[in-house]
Image (tube, rainbow, N blue to C red; front, side, top):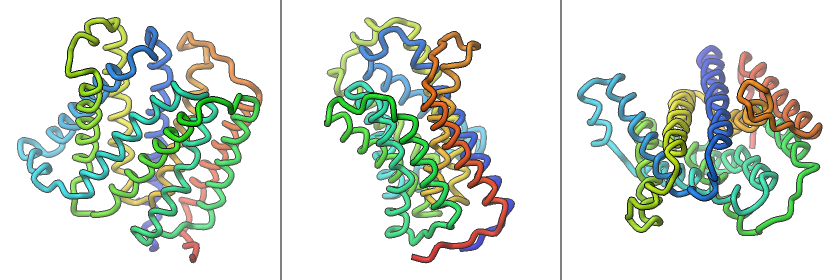
Length: 302
């Protein structure tokens, strides 16, 4: 399908910015006190804040009738909410059960999963420039983790792949039925994540009392970051195929490395030379794709 080049490039910018928004989540998590101890409290607060922020956005956008969006919830919204909540939860589990390198490697599979599912479910095809950019970005991720340990829990790697699949499938669902309100999917994802976390915590508020107050604030801030990115991502989804959406979301990885490195945030995690090189390769892949987005898209025939 050939689309207007301006709307296509504008969507590219929106999703690119979404990835940058999400990258600040790495800084937020680094400021938490013993963050690995409070995983489910973190997921609970983040889920609630995501749902509330999206509801506020819908109210500001549509006024008092915003609730009518929820009367039109369909199977795509429910499945999308489940998939996105799975991605939220799986990422935290994976990165605490295995090395960051393994989790990152699993997330690099997102564009390819989305491309396969998008082709069979939606009949989406890839432009040649997108396919090339995906391969370059995957190579960049491989370079980033070259010097890192790839040992660790096999279960953590599997959960990382499930997380990547969840986000890829969510990207497909928000393009599946155009008539279904898209932002309700994000609200549902936040609520599903919150309910699941509260269930694991035994429907008790005691674990929240035990968590440092600063962690609560940081969890809510992270929810704001994620929700803002999802708003941009969903707006861009109108004009970009599923595989391209997930390709651009890899900028979260590159941005996260930069923010925890530069002195302004006070974290000063100095990346290795391979991490820097891999990040440059991923960025070049996205820039190359962006250059192609200015031109008329040439479908890649199956």
